[in-house]
Image (cartoon, rainbow, N blue to C red; front, side, top):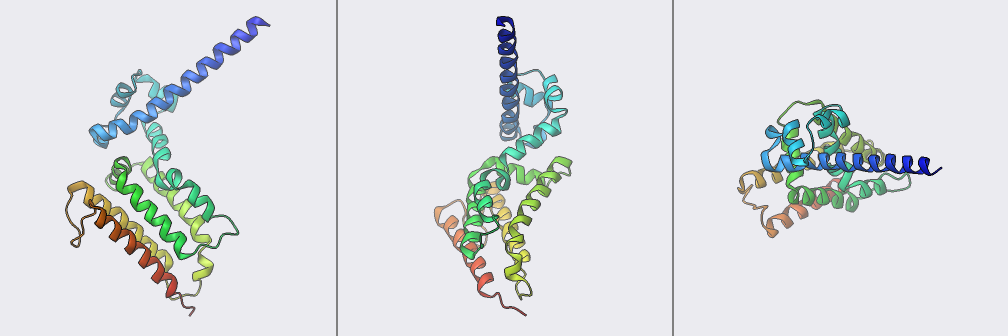
Length: 219
C-alpha cells in the first residue's frame, strides 16, 4: 500500500512538473514576441526563453505552430479578455442593446490600446498566411456569430446593415490602434496616445452604435 502511494505521489509530481513546463513554454512565446517580433519566433528562441530543451516543443505540443496557437488562444481578446462579457451577451434571454455593444467595443479598443502583445498578434495576423493565425481569426468569427444571432432579429428587414457597420467599426479600432502604436502619428488630427484622443474615439464608437440602433427602420 505504501509503495502504491509513493508511486501515485511520484506520478502526480511529474504531471505537475509537465503542466508547469508547458505553461512556461506558452508564456515564453509572448516574451519572444515582445523581444524579437514574430520573425524571431522559433523553437530555439522559445525553448531558450523558457529554459527548457528544444525537443520539448515537439514532445509536448507536436510542433511550434501548436504551441503558438495555444498562446494565441490564451491571449485573444474575444476568447480570453472579453469571455465574461460575451457569455452575458449570448444568453438566450439577453436583449442586446446599443449600450451593451458600445461597451463591448470600447472595451476592445482599450484592451488593444493597452496590450502590446495583442497589437503584435494583430499585426502578425494580417502580415503572414499561417494556419494557426487563420484558425484564430475563424474562432473570433464564431464568437461574433453568437452575438449576431442575438441581434439579427432586431435588424431583420431593416435599412441598417448592422454587420457591415460592426465590420467597419472593429476594423477601424484595429487600424487606429496599430497606426498609433506603430509610429505614434496622428490620425485625422487625433492623437490616440493621449487621454483626450482615447476618450474621443471611445465616445465616437458609442455615437456610431447608437446611430445604428436609432436608424433601425423596418422596410
